[in-house]
Length: 425
Image (cartoon, rainbow, N blue to C red; front, side):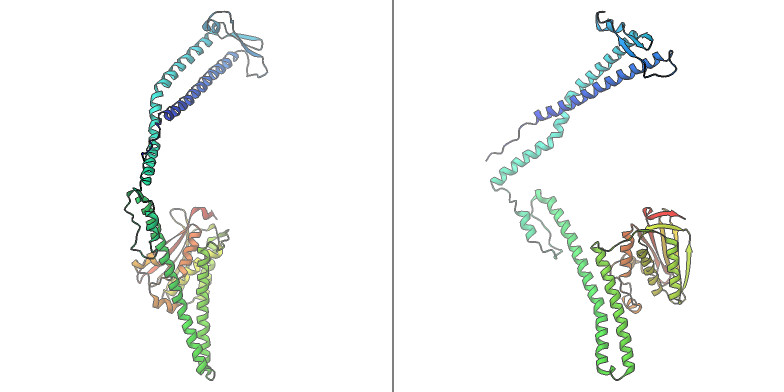
């Protein structure tokens, strides 16, 4: 079946060019009127100035011309401008304005004629992609009728994909579908990464819950066998079960927090509060509950910010708790509040602990990540604290800065952007 060639676009290009030229003509007319009004008003004001100290709107004003004087120039030369009890001849000025407008009109007409053809060819260039698209569509239609192309290729390729297999990608071999293939393959890559992340999260959560459950079951069995008659075993079992229950409760609460955050259902109550006072409160709390370490407070700037005070305080507590766990007894932990060079409100926790290996620093905010899993279990960590802190800080438009050296210490800084800062006290 022969393909139908779309009609020539020259008529459409002519219409577009004519429309643009008419717009330009309208703009020229408005320009001419503006010039006439501007010069006429300026001359009238100058003519009245010798007779009146200020402009008076109540005066009778008008122009008179002798229409029987002959041609347009003769008529304009007889012009008289009257205002109040005075009148002034305006013939010379009217002729000068007439000549000026004629010159402007001639220039505009020349420009209008010169730009007519370029405007036409410009319209043709604008329409060329559309005309090419129409020709291509006609060719594709004809090819489809003759079964030269199989437009089910992409559907068949997508249908055969296993979303969990990272080695399979869409490839139909059709050059016209290449960009669509790349877009779909990119989407599949993101889906696979999300699937792996969720699978890893579920696996880690299951592993974390399996340990306390096993401990509780073991002590329950021990109590069932010997704890009924042995008070020492009974006390040991009850203490261990209570401890593991608290660990499980803390883990479940953290998991629920992150799940609500991922689903957008975690409430955030934004209020104005003193970041400096809040960090001072955290410092006092840590001194009270952890006498094994030396805590120092460095308030360099008194800052009022807008945010959820309970969440920001939770972040500070998480950072202090991590510093306490990984700093030997007698070590120093410093809490600091200041503006950085970008005028961001910052607070940081710095310790003299075991530090973090350089390769692990980019991973510390991942869920369930532990640089040293065995040490973390000893200290009661779940590997979710910094993930929660990261969610809170990002929810407030902030970011972290981490500096750590093995066996020297770690400094973690929370920086909140300018929109969170209310004022400096």
